[in-house]
Image 1 (spheres, rainbow, N blue to C red):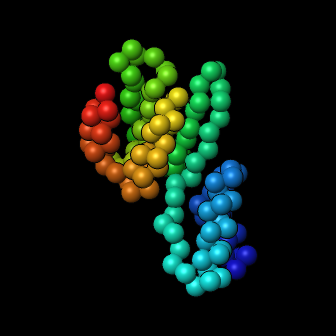
Image 2: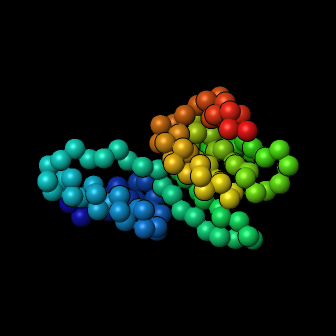
Length: 125
């Protein structure tokens, strides 16, 4: 069991955040009890820098293209960087947009296509 978890962590890359520890514990508990494991959530971490709450969801390092979406005022606050791979959302960076974490976690988990993500953001403006 431990070897499987370690092998999985090496393949995915290991993000040291409490959400990763929670997901690993849930996966082990499901394995022990024979229950169906919960869907795997994208990696996540946050930091407070330069007066901004910066939240990263997914794996930006796997992107082959980025799209910067700025708010109407053109500032950094409320900006979002989309990290796309083959036209699908592989990750994102949210700048002081904490209210969108749940939405973007689902979009990254589901590998939403770029047009769906951009349409959703357009609706929110």
